[in-house]
Every structure is written in C-alpha cells, then in structure tokens.
Length: 255
Image 1: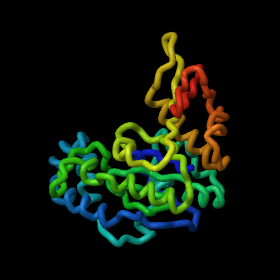
Image 2: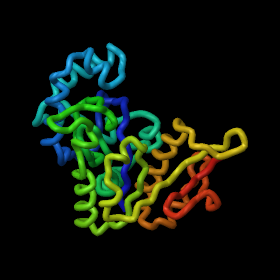
Image 3: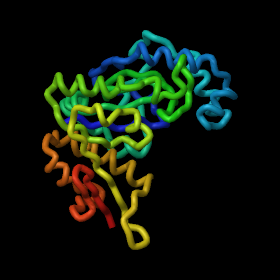
Image 4: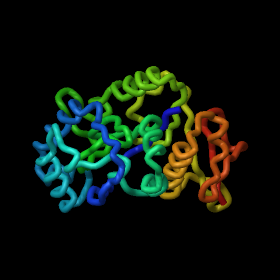
C-alpha cells in the first residue's frame, strides 16, 4: 500500500535530523520552473497571490530569491521533518526508528505545490506554496494545470514498479484534486475522521488533520498492508464506524 498526505504551511528548518537517509525530489526540473515564476513576483504581488500578510510575503519573497538548484544537504531538510502542523504532530516522526523511516520512505508520498510529489526523506528548501494557488506559468493558469497528470503518472509508475495496488488517501481535498482519479491504477481507500458534536458526527478540520497524521503513523509503524487492518486503528479515541462507512470510504468516529 502507498499512502499520500498533504504538506504543511508551517516549517521547522532549524533542528538537526539524526537520520542519514536523504534523497532529492524527483521532479526538481518542474519545481525550477515554478520557482522562476515566483522570483518575478514582488512582495506585494506575493501577498495578493497567496493571501498572506506583508510580513509573510516578504519572508517568502526572500526564500524564492534564494531558491536554486542544485542545493546542498546543509541548506535543506528532509520533508517529513521539515513540515510541522497538526498532521505532522500526529505522525510524530521524531519517534520513528531508522528502519521505520526507511519503510516510510517506500510507502508514503507528500503532495506539494512546489515539488509535486515528495518522498518523506527528500531534501527540500524552505518554501510556501499551496496547491490551490492560481499561479500562471506559461500557458498554465493554475498549479493543477501545470502539474497536469504528471503526479498521477508518477504514482502509477512507482506502484507498478513496486507491485503495490492500494492507495490510501490521507490528503486534504485541495491536494488530492491534483491527482486524476480516473487514471489512477489503484484501489483508492479514503479514511474519514468525524467527531461527535451537537448530536451528530461531523468532520472538524483541526481534529481531522491530527487524525490523518495519527493514521499515517499507525500505517507506517505497523507496516499495514491489508485494507481490513486499517479498520483496527484506534488512536486518540477514534474507532472504525461500520454504520457510517461506505465502500472504500472508511469512517472513524470519536465521542
């Protein structure tokens, strides 16, 4: 099974990662084109494009002015350690063994507006770029158009090479939309997390993000390879709800 997740807006680039496992993103030639388009934007235009504050716009202006390839390990960080936020606090990668990191490298992918598709231990430079950003690059008006079917083809090729047939979707809707589900050569399973509120079960964004991270941790640390074993997930008070689940949409509820 291969699992996909979203990146995070926030980054933690300062702490030292002890793991010697490192790789570079496979689609850096495409990332270079995106970075070149962003280098031409003033801080004011970046603020409007990304809907961020002037302070954040200046930070990201500086980041893209300095963005370059090739880059060295010393100025970058493995993606799964660099991203922070609710999903990544749920994954808690700092408590992974080296063997678990190596397994995760083979069974997890991170969708990215700038890098396209990242392996967990791919080295990245600091950046901010959401997949839904309406950035024009040549004939493309959005990042969805720019990436086209390339991310889907890359996943299909990897799954064919490794004889994997199941894709677990733990990405947000914004990032999952970058994949063409009609062309995915895989059985697609989507875990959904709901909390009890006002007499019914609802997806509460903050808690759902953390739960997607916990599910990622569960899948990687336990080396889950069977769809039935996904249903045994029971972290942080969530349990599989057969009544609310339908087909390959597996609903987990709490409260």
